Length: 393
Ligand code: SDX
Image 1 (cartoon, rainbow, N blue to C red):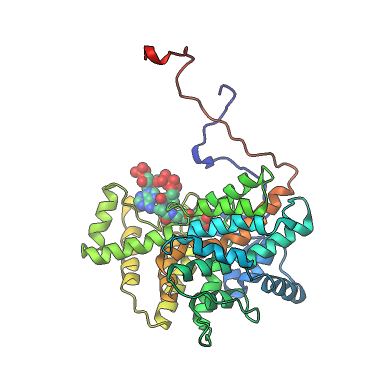
Image 2 (image 1 turned 30 degrees about the vertical axis):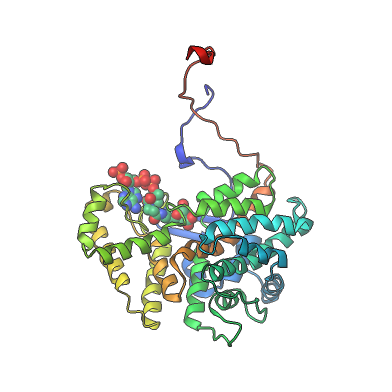
């Protein structure tokens, strides 16, 4: 296309929007949500409060936070027909396509609130998503294990309820493990937004056609599932387990990565933007040591992860390519210690990222500069040519 001026595969050098939500400085390892450093929010805030901050732009007063929390609690139940939806999938279905299908299906159950330009309907859809995604995720997890689903108990907050839905049983009381609750709340905060990453840009692009919030988030879930993006946290666990099972040792594995043996990558390392340490990885690494220690999971895989990190950070192959641990490198070890199966790890990433997707979609839909996303290309195909009848081919 003659009038294309720049070729920017993966849009790395293209700003697709002006945004007030999240600031990243990749060279200095800085991440801020609405101006607040991630380190402060990780230490002092909660996932529900950070969700409010990302969506509405300000930290809530105590009353605003309480009202927001109560609104979410009132919407945790799924429509009974949607509950039956889960038995339609094969029992061993991966939870990510189940999640995106169920989120897409929400637009069929809640047709009363799909207008992207009606503030009240957008508010209702946002709260429904925040409340129901954990329930959908837990039901997908329980179904894949042939376990009964437990109804949400709205006397619990979002994270406690999610833990109960995954690990509680209708036949006995469930004790919330405070270490688990705090660790999961922190991980959700750290995943809550990350400016124009692949899945968030997908949510914006789909929403730019004025598709509703459920459809846009469903598309974002699909993008997140890829192993180069949110799927990396599961791939890290598989990588660590593979090193352990092979008995080949960390150094040997690192050599295979450096020799670029087909498909072997150091999963959980490298980033499109952070060319220095991912600030989230620093916090998560500390949490992994604490949680695994506290939960008595003296984890051999954690030792392998530490050794892998040490070797990579002192090896010029990785240092020269500015490859450092990213958000996914240590998260899987914590999720595993909390009792989640590996294929649920990216689902947990999606629950954390949901408030960011919602905030970015709402900013996009209200942005007067938003146009329907329609990138151009550089055509490298055949020049004009005449049709050849099949008998002459
Ligand atoms: C997330 O964008 C976001 O913000 C995403 C995220 C978020 O919060 O939304 O932060 C979440 O997706 C984190 C990334 C999770 N993915 C992984 O951990 C998968 C492993 N990482 C890579 O595939 C890779 O690092 C990417 C995809 C993350 C980034 O790719 P880049 O910046 O395009 O780097 P590149 O592919 O151009 O690589 C540059 C060089 C190449 O070597 P050379 O061709 O120069 O010899 O570095 C090498 C690559 O081969 N390289 C790696 C590597 N990542 C890059 N080599 C080994 N292991 C790796 N992980």
